Image (cartoon, rainbow, N blue to C red):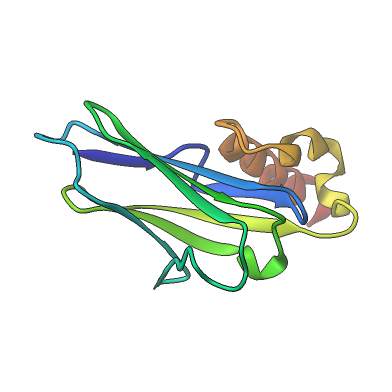
Length: 135
């Protein structure tokens, strides 16, 4: 079995935007009966007073679970974990950006505007930029 959060392991999102995490579970003998989500080690409560949190799960040969968190806040940053009941879990770290884009990321601002498969490459390019030109 294989579990992956698309666009991970690091995702960048602007405050006020929607966090969109999609977990894919592959190669299981049967679809998982449940796929749970945690944030910072605690099970996500979809009935919390925070509101704006929803989940869509589709089961099949490749099962998926999409977690949507509307109007992202800095308190929404941190590690999210997708936990299927019949496969390994997967983790992604969400970074919520506030105000202006940090100077080190100015050249890569297009990367932080959406949650795509290229997020990991964007993160790597930012780290390389900092290592080569800032330090």
